[in-house]
Length: 339
Image (cartoon, rainbow, N blue to C red; front, side, top):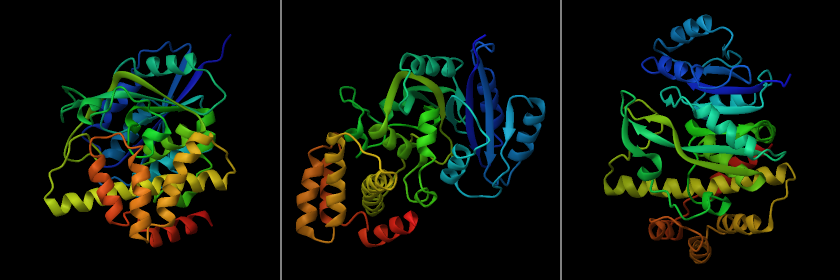
């Protein structure tokens, strides 16, 4: 008899008492053949101060065969470290790993659709699969708009490393990866975790040069928008100075993530396709000479030519005018993380 496909769902929670029960039920009630697919939910609570942990304890007792509470690293360590703690937990064994937020709702066929893509693209390479999402209100009801519409994802561009090097596309709530990818992610230095933008975007960046990333155009998650979620699809209103400061940090973080990718590849002696390496070199060149306005303008123009988003003129002006990476302190942090 064929062994069941093992699916590990990794969820980090923090003060999610209002929504977590609904999300857990949406995961455990997935429309899959239970004789063929084994879904197990691994949850790490990041030091919730509300009733979340009590709710999780009740759920784990009720569904003891399907839920494991991770207590290896208690306390508040932040969402990025919390997810990496789950990814790196050697006691979790599976064929495929799905990331899950605490406050969303999975469509009933999310796991089935995603596994179908993995099976059609069976590979020994690291593979990640991500889907579109429905934006939902605080009650979990779709507002009739996709994340792809809200974020204005270009429909005619291939989502490869060149694309992801200066934009975000993969949302952790809609992301899954195979065991080979998980093994690759285990090689990320612990010190990098606090330096990357978010866990999901950095994992996608790694896969874009070391494996395969596959998109499902169909929304498979109700991505709940409310006042307490950490990351959402709703844009915040800012005054001019706040907007400029935010954009400088955003552009700088995009470049720093590429520098961390470069350091990750070098540390683990991983070679990548020459066309990807050429793109990666653009960011290394910018960083290495960001102290000079002349070189910043020159290298910013080279980066500008691979940008695809509507804000690219603004991005060019910012990375030309300012050392958005804060190169001296960033270099010190990266070197420290590599020790």
